[in-house]
Amino acid sequence: MTVLVCSLKTSEPQRIEPGAYRVVRFPFGAAESHDVHTMHQVVQPDGVRLADWIRDDRSGLIWPAAEGWGTLHALIQWEDGEYTEVRSQFVRDPLGLSTGPDSTCTEDDVPTPGGQFRAKTWGLFVHPGTPLALVVRHDARTAQRVTLAEFKLAIHPTEV
Image 1 (cartoon, one colour):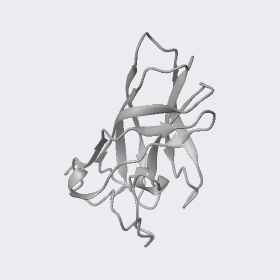
Image 2 (tube, one colour; image 1 turned 90 degrees about the horizontal axis):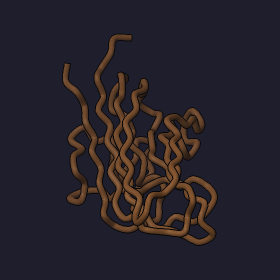
Image 3 (cartoon, rainbow, N blue to C red; image 1 turned 135 degrees about the vertical axis):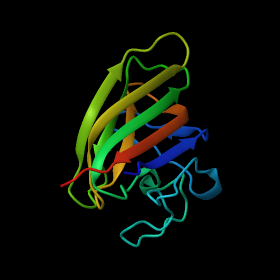
Image 4 (cartoon, rainbow, N blue to C red; image 1 turned 180 degrees about the vertical axis):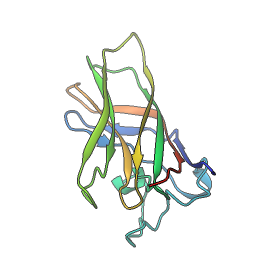
């Protein structure tokens, strides 16, 4: 069975306001790392066409191309900041477009000196029509920036 892969990466800094979780956004097209199975497209599976990836949370969604066991990977690099904690999680349907938000693999980390560099991996069953996202938050009083992010999904098809 073929493993289906979507691999996203951006080095465009993203401003993260304090408090609530925010979807990490990724560019489309030539800036994309790998998406031969069309799981991260400007025209979303529900027909919505995105105009600007940096301003639209939908640009952070990976829409699984098949049922299966999904392995998610993420890399998040934060600039040096005035936070005492940074958090990340994977979320099924974070924007409430299908089944409703369902978070998993929440991690919180106390900062080390300088920037924060975090990597994570998690496994879960994935379904077409239920998008996935990487979300982050921090506890500083002012906005902080994620300076590099990667988000990857590998789907190993399973029998139902």
